[in-house]
Length: 156
Length: 383
Image 1 (cartoon, helix red, strand yellow):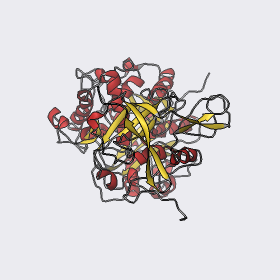
Image 2 (image 1 turned 45 degrees about the vertical axis):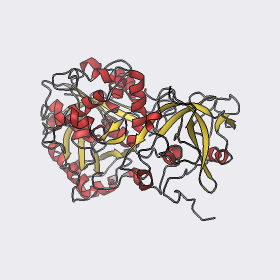
Image 3 (image 1 turned 120 degrees about the vertical axis):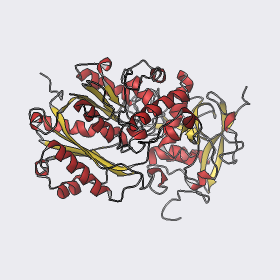
Image 4 (image 1 turned 90 degrees about the vertical axis):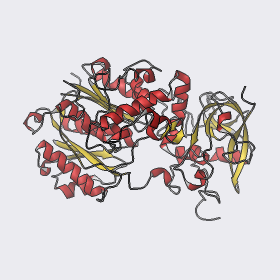
């Protein structure tokens, strides 16, 4: 092990730099599971993770598995100036997904053509607010996996 | 009788450096020049300064500033976080300190070389773990990307169009063309240029983004009873507010119940509760415009129109001279200079002195706002 966790892929894409509260999310993602923190007492899911429940103040938490489907709440298509690794992939998409099974939570991500396809693998004109999506998992580096999304159906 | 800040302090001096893409002097030097210019404007010697307030992102701290300008013994100093959300709070903190006797002469300032210096989002080594871990790995890198996400949702939900955003960019550019100090003075904007410009983060194009500017600004506050003795016409701090709404998430606010209802709603509630007048009585506004899309959101938040009506409000010349709400009359962050919104404060002062280059005739009240979408602040100024 190196003394400092790596912060980018070999090509320069940014890796998640978890904090203590967020670490379980990434550990579950590495196992191919999409889970969000939820209160162990009142059961309310919360995101981003934090030490205690804003509704009942309980410090006991569980990690609730989500079914892995959702809808696009909004999306952007970034163009340069960007970090070099992202410039090479632009224009790509970043979406905000409302996952099924946990109201009030929105997960940033990318819509890709296949689990390990690049960020620019889907034509942005195929995206629209409300589009149904399904989670996939992409390995970015040894032990580092991020959830991504695939369109669940063609645009009507 | 409840304690109040209403009209208990006044801005009596403003100062600034030139604005440019690149200035040769260091930020610290620029900060000193802006503060000394503001003190000279007020007619107050630096030795009388005993209060300081700035942004947490300001790199010239009060120690460096105080010893360079020859300030007296400081008894109040404060910093406000969240980038441009903290702009008006610097003045609010000084107003509170002076009103409660913690200081007598306060300076607020911002000096930044954003034009020639580093872009914070380019730092790949030092990332804030929250919320960066949830956004940056996906390429949501820059403030423009984060706001574009809200902008697209806003356009989808309320039927706003790029033409509405263009009207915001145009109003700012038109005012910059009346202001020789503006970076974009002499550079008119057309609808064709806007519609054919390059994208930065769709749906936001180049002209939806603020400038990248080197420059510094400052203002001087004293108690209202001393203000008439200063060199210029006093501009009173009528009301001030900070706003961190319940369940807000900092610089990226995607996880509250309604991300299109931002901190400006909270700031507005506090402002109007404290004020003797309401939105309909505001003669001119300086609305934080790091991105055009923040303006319709702020117009709704501060109560100039209903929810979802901010884009339509901008139609029919509403933001232009003689319109319902002339705004960003020096050109704002989009077309004068982007220095974390401090130029909006100084322009508010000029309007109420009657010395703006795009003067609203008889302006007696001005709203100044900090960044919408982040923990924010706002001021109501009056002459």
